[in-house]
Image 1 (cartoon, rainbow, N blue to C red):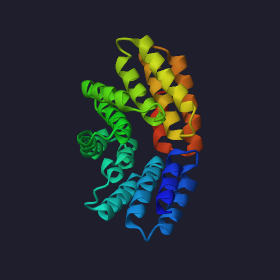
Image 2 (cartoon, rainbow, N blue to C red; image 1 turned 60 degrees about the vertical axis):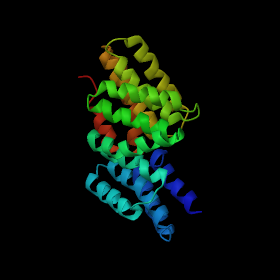
Image 3 (cartoon, rainbow, N blue to C red; image 1 turned 30 degrees about the horizontal axis):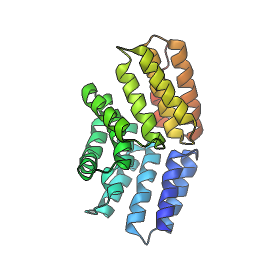
Length: 245
C-alpha cells in the first residue's frame, strides 16, 4: 500500500494535476505513509519538485534535505539516483547541482548493469551537461540512453532525442529538427505534462538554431499552454525567454 501511495505522489508531479492541487495531494499522502519513513521520503521527492515548479526553491531544497536525512544510508536504487531532487536544481537553473545529484547514482547503475533506471538517468544527466555547455559529454550520455532505453520508456526516449537534437542543430539542422519533432510526437502520446513541455521547448531551441522564428514561437506557445495548465511557473519562465522578439 505504501508503495502505491508513493507512486501516486510521483504521478501527481509528472501528470496533468495542477501544481497547487498536486502539492495538497502529496501532503495528504505524506500523512498517510508517515508510518513508513522510506515511503515518506519518496513522497517528499515529488513534493519538493512541485514546490520548485511553483518557484519556491528554498522550500523545495528544504524538503530535499529532509528526505535525505530520512533515507540516510539506505541502499535503494530509487533513492540513490535522485532524479526528482535533480529536477529541483534544473528548475532552479542550477545544472551543476543537478549533475552532482545524478552522478553517483548513475555510476552505481553502470556498475550494476541496471538498464531501466540508467536510460532515464543518463538522459537527464545529458540535459544537465548540455546546460553547462559540456557538449561532448552530453553526447556520450545521449548515446548511452539511446542504447539502453526500452521502447516503452517514453521519458528516456523523448529526453535523449531532445538533447541530441540541440547538439546536432549547428551542423545538421535537418536531422536535428527530425529528432526534436519525433520527441514531441512521442511525448504527445503520454499524459506526462512535464515531458510534453520539455519536448516542445527542445523543438523551439532547435528551430531558433535553424533561424525558424515562427516555428520556434509556435512550439513555445504550445509548451506554455501545457505549463500554464500545470502551474509550472519555473519552466514557463524559461520557455518565455525563448520567444523570438
